[in-house]
Image (cartoon, rainbow, N blue to C red):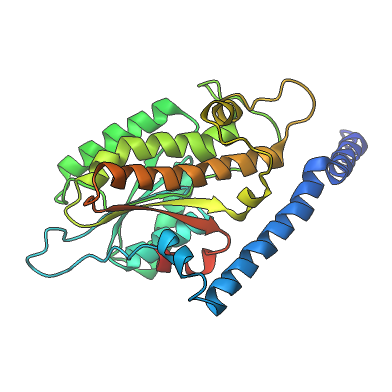
Length: 303
């Protein structure tokens, strides 16, 4: 009989790794600052609900009318198209399910085709008539995003739908605990959470603009952006933080990199909306932010 493997070294290594995590700066930053940021966000929502007149200016700058499509016989859009990234689980899968029930053709985007197919199966169990498609896309790869752009354009040409998109939800995101460099040379978490969403949005923008009905971009941000402080918003310094965030020495600043990626996505949302309407005030496209998990319970109400 072969001797049983010695599990003591691996167990000891796991215990040491867990202890190291508990004693790390990132752990306590997430435990303390992120908790305070979440409480602050909910307190802000409470103030907004209790004093709508005082905070009316905030509502105007934050919320936009919902994009409702018409099912009338003379409507140009018979079935609106929605693209949801990170749709294999969590908020992305929930949004895909809710929108499919509302009559959208939902394109589920994710890194794992098997998980996407599983999500489609779960949606079909609840509504067999749901209109769904899947694309395997890695947002930490520019070539994968470009391939998706070509694929969705060809898919729209081959389908009987209007060659446009009515809704784009940039939901995909990761929280990495170690530094990983993508094939494009960027930090994987920063490229997945922000740079990839930036590239995808700009590539699909012509399809959103071509929509004959109001279209919308929803970027899923996070309450953790409140933890960013002492950040110079100068174009040069912020750009350096985004594209040169790979650590040269010491431990990987996981929490701060995540916060910065969501902070950049928030700034991108505001600036894109401002620039779109600065160039063309009559443009029928809106850019919104949806916080995760603050709005997870009623995400479809903000779409």
